[in-house]
Image: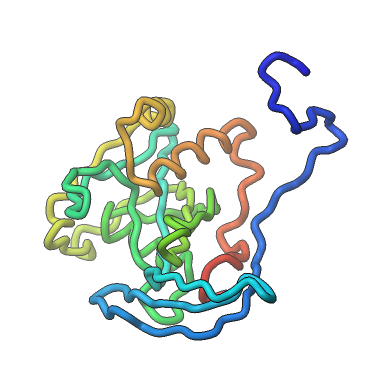
Amino acid sequence: MKDGAMPGISETPSTFRKVSDMPSPRRLLSSSKVYEGRIWDVVSDAFELGEDTGTLVRDYIDHPGAVAVLPMNVDGEILLLKQYRHPVGMELWEIPAGLLDVAGEDFVAGAARELAEEADLTAATWNVLADFFNSPGSSSEAIRIYLARGLGDVPEAERHVRTEEESEIELVWVPLDEAVLAVLEGRLHNPSAVVGILAAAAARADGFRNLRPANAPWPAHPSQR
C-alpha cells in the first residue's frame, strides 16, 4: 500500500466509477403537515426503506427551492452582496438569490429577476454552475446556481425598491481568486456563495466551455419529479 492510501480503496484507474446521485423512491405510508409557515412548511413522513425494515418517521422543511446567480464582469471579478441573516445573527457576503415561489416561473427567469432586484443588473449570457441540496437531512430545498455574464445595468427608473433586510444590501466586486481564498480561509459562509465561487474557479480552467446551458434539465428539483 502506498503511503497515505486508504485500506480497501483501489487506486487502479480501471476501477474509476462515474458517480451520480439518483432518485430512490421508497414506500410512503403517510405524510402530514405539522407546521405551516409564512414561506415554507414542516411535514412529517412515515415510510419504509424496504420490506421488513419497519417504519421510519422523518420531519423536514417542505421548500419550494431557490436559484442563485454568480455575476461575473469582463475583468473576471464576481459580485458579492452583504446582507444580515437573522437565524445566524451575522452579516454574510452572498450572491444574488431567491425563492422559486412564483408558480410556473421558468428557473432562468427567476434567476434574472433576483439579479435585477438585488444587484440592479441584467445578463446576456447564462450557464449553470452547480446544483445542490442545501441541507438534505432536514429540508427538500434544491438550489441551482447560474453564472451570469454579459452584464448590463437595470435602468434607474425600473430598479426594484429594496425593503427590510434587503434595504441594507452592500455590493462589492471581488477578484475570483480573492473570493476562493476567502472561502478557504473560512471568511465566507453562505452556501450558495461558497459553492458558486468554487465551481466558477474550477470551470475557469477550461474557459467555462464545459458548463451546462442555462436551460439544462434539473431533475433533482421537487417540481420536476
